[in-house]
Image (tube, rainbow, N blue to C red):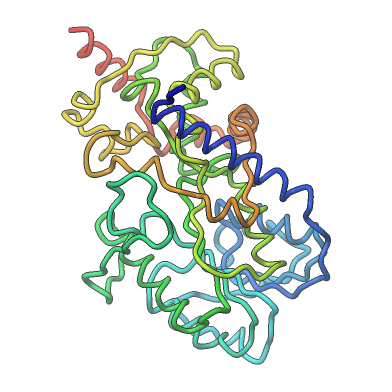
Length: 363
C-alpha cells in the first residue's frame, strides 16, 4: 500500500497527539516553586498564571499595571517597565522566571543581567517568526534564525519582528547557558485571542451565509491552543525543561476545510464556502492586509509556514485539545466580549469587503 504526502502528515500528527496524551497521564505533582512572570496579563499569560497558581506555586507578576489591572488580585504584582529601571526586582530570588513580554534586545539584556544570579531557570517566549524564513516544510528548532538589521529599533514592524525575537533569544541563551528554554509558538488561539486572527473564522462562520474561504479545503493550518501552551509551559517550569521548542499542532493535522466545517457544525450555522484561489488572494493583498488570517499560501516563500515541526515539544509532553473544543470555547469567550469588540474584529474581512470580493469571484 502506498500513501501520499497528505496521509503521511496526518499519520505523523496522530502519533504526536497520542504521545502528548500519554505524557499527560504521567504528570506528577511537584513541590511548590517561586516563579516570576514578566507580563502575565496579555493573551497567553493569564492561562499560564492560572495553571501555576492552581498547581500551588508561589507567583510574582511584573508588569506596568495597565493591561487588565486587578486581574489577579490574589497574586503579588510588582509595577515596573521592561525598559527599566527594574529596581523592584533587586535583592530577590526565584526558582524560575517566565518572560513573555520581552520584545527588544535592550529589554532582555536588562532583565537577564539582573536575574542571572537570582534564578535557576529562565524561560523566554519567542515566536516561529524568529526563523530566517518559512519556506521549507518541516522546519525544526535548529533552522537558521532571522537577522536583525537595526538592533537599536524602538518600534516593532512586520520586517523586524522576527529579527528582534531572534536577537532576544540569543541574549537569553548566552546569559543562562543550559539554564534556559526558548518557546516558539505559532498563532496562539482560543479563549482570549483578542488578535482575532483565529477568532475571525469561527465567528464569521457562525454568522452564516456565503463565506469567502482561502485557497482549498485541503490547505493545512497551524496554531496552538493557548491552554495547551500553558500546559506545556507549566511542565517547563516544574521540570526546568531546557532547549528550544516549536509550539504548534502537528503538521497536516488540521486543514482549512476542517476548521471551517468544524465551526459550522459547532455553531449550527447555515454557512456555505466559496473558495478563492491563491492567485486571487495575492492579487487582492488579502494576507498582507490581515483580511485573510491564519491561512498561508501553500506555494511560495511561506509554503512551510503551516508545516513547522513540533516533534521536539511533543517528545517533552506537548499535547493538543481537539479542534471542536478550541472552536466551541473560542465562540463562548467571544460571546462574552464587550459589544464594541464583537462589532469590529481586529482581523478578517468586513461584511462589505467580503461581499465585494465574492462578487468579483463570480464575475
